Length: 456
Image (cartoon, rainbow, N blue to C red; front, top):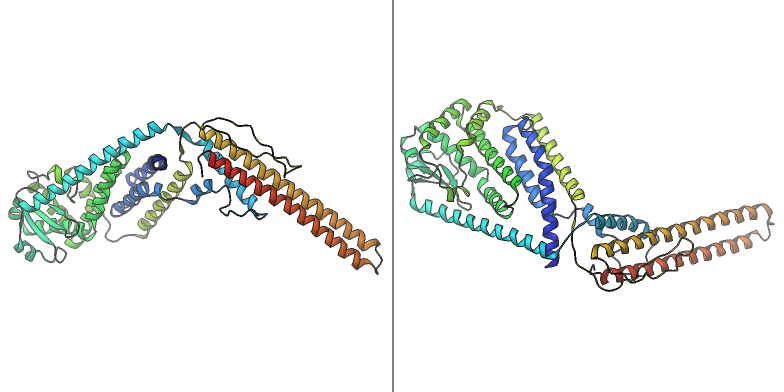
């Protein structure tokens, strides 16, 4: 349970930070017109998915902080391993130092409030699903409309006529188009075809499953106003994307816009029900002006510049995701630690000698920081001592070899060279053995101290 609290809190912090740094980029990209109206829905959906799923994906930048000691349990680490372990230890030390501590009781309270709000949001979604079922139960299927407009809707799509609900697309597995009776009976054929093309675009674009995932995310993250604003922008961009697709199928953008306005005049008295609106693809009158402008001003064919801009902004979103993962402050649960931990200390002159630290009582993060600092210092000192020893051996070997070349008679030069190589190999092996033993002992003490602090 403690690990779950820890993970949820750190996830929430990174999620909120990512929303804060992504929102300005999206605002600039949309407000300045850098991203074409038809591409906005895809861009916003990518940003929405990154803010929700991204913090749950472990990146190498996060995992580095936990890679302090080699995963192998061997007591004979290779000579190159400490050099790779040192950056990990330094990163983990910085991670612990920057971590914000929070009492377990407060963490449990925050998570409880989060889950309670999420449960309420999910209950409202279930209510919306029940409302959609009631709408379909109160409506009648129109085979006549399905046959008349069979070229405007996907094959197998049903058209239902409701007393007052619609127009909207409903359903996940078997999506249906629902029209209000007044719209279906009084609207001219061309205008009704435009309405059906728009709703059919939602079905062809698979908007309804995406809409469900979007509403589930809003229910879970009910406390995040930025995500709610982003979701509203997605809804608006989705309607514009469907309008552009429908206008191309309709034949003329201006004629489609006029048909849309005519349908709005008939639609005004019949607004969607609030308890069902959450799970249906239905247009909002608040974005009508923006939709009309996008329909009339949209280019006939996508340009390479629009695609390049979309890819550039998408790449920037990926970079911001990685940056948020690196910059997000970490949260650690604060609780007292009773007991003693054995720490490792050394000097560059005697890497195999260790002093045992006196028992300390501190908060968990403080004790872990001290333990990691001492272990990191030991690795640096022992590695420096080992490197200096090898350097001295190499210098001495080179001097002896040069002297041998100058002064030794040819008769016994080979024998003396053999003894020189043997002595060098023995001294090199002894230095390496001391280094490995010292680092293995330090690793064992570090792991024991880490386990005693509750960090396996």
